[in-house]
Image: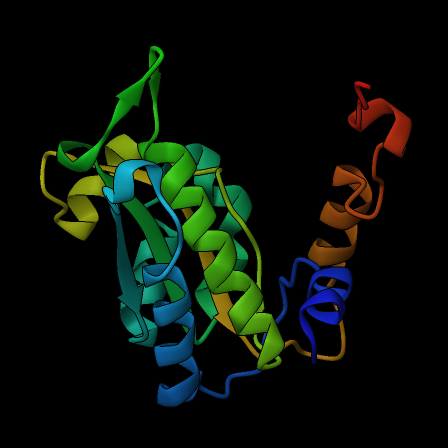
Length: 183
């Protein structure tokens, strides 16, 4: 799959086969994140990789009340939590870049995963206050997002269909609402 095909075909996956993510694919995913660009090359991203089914199930119920909407992650063979070390932040023009930098790295990871047929789903519904101690993260780390990873199941569950419809996942703004050309 070339880059364009990967970007155009990637979508959020909420139903996974139980097959584990192969070690070489996981290595490619993590390397794609590691090589991402960052402001002043600070590389603030840190990633917590969970592959133990019991730990994943436990984490699914330690994301706080808002995180219960993501209970489907309990069935994923791999979950990665994207964090940023604020000690590695750079602030330019009043803007902290650790969030931007970590988001770029995580997206590169997701695209690499998809190029190997591994689905993901960017999740922001979690309680950092509850999840951070569960993961035993250092004080300077912030949780930016998390995602399950795995081979997509062919059949979508009712929950997946409902979330897709509610979120309008396929809807995109028209180009004229996004791009502005200046001569």
